[in-house]
Image (cartoon, rainbow, N blue to C red):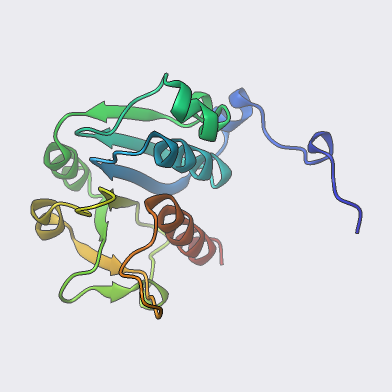
Length: 176
């Protein structure tokens, strides 16, 4: 049970990442305030070969030292794009036949563990602001709402934790 050194992990380099087949998932960040959260999302996206990240509204963009601090270089591997308006991104994704999923607590939301994926479908996962969540307009325009079940006293998870939980769940379902 010896811990492995980084050199033993056989990870892709940036060019290898860019050439690798991607997981059919896109992340949309709707007005994220924390630069550390944004960096963490990039790092998770790199870990699971996510196709693309959209940074929308007030969401900061690389290069930025606080994003870099948590992304650890993932801003170089993961494709990303800035868009001022989240709704325009959602409309464009829907036009491209991408299923849009708001990660939020809402009426008629499907619990993440109950959500069934289709392996021939591409999904866009929309994560919202640390205080206000995904905007109501975006929630209303999404194809479905996915809720992470929670059983304690708190009403939400940190956005970077939510991204990790949802990406892991959908990645595992897509790889079965």
